[in-house]
Image (cartoon, rainbow, N blue to C red; front, side, top):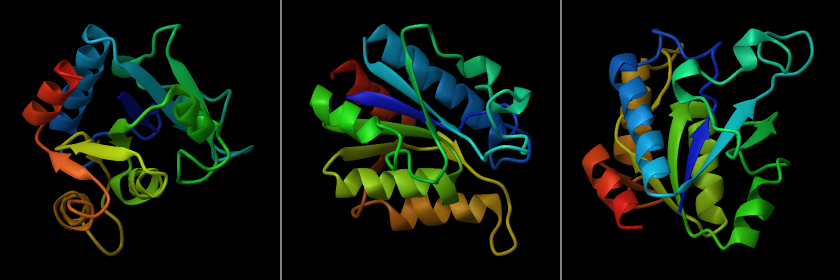
Amino acid sequence: MILLVIDTQKLIMTNNLYNFDSLVPNIEQLIATARKNKIEIVYIRHDDGPNTELTEGKEGFDIYEKFQPTKDERIFDKTVNSAFKGTGLLEYLKEKGTKKIVVAGLQTDFCIDATVKCGFEHDFHMIVPAHANSTEDNHFMSGENSYKYYNEWMWPGRYATCISMEETIKEMEYN
């Protein structure tokens, strides 16, 4: 099992996210539980490329201060929605024999969705804890509706096991 923390970067970790006040402590709890139980944490950062605010060298590219990785935790950078495409993550996890991935981070309707579905297609058991991913309002849906659409309808029973934080913590403690 690993904990995959996706795109929790300073530029996009804002109060505009749905349920921000629950999201932050939930991800903090997942990180603390993983470290306590010696579960590897892998961070993913999104890079929009040169001349953007979400690129290496810009402050917004850095991981949110409350989720800082330790020097031993791996970081993979990506340029598309899926954490698996062209990052080396897939090969790394296959080499380690990883079977289960707990997914947390941003954004529900972009990179979390793509990563959950791609992870499923690569035969990983994807676990999505409740209120440990989020997104902003868009032209079609509120952040809340996007969150509910994926976490309560799209992923469960298809691409991922979507469970409460409490169930996820128990799963991590008995890994």
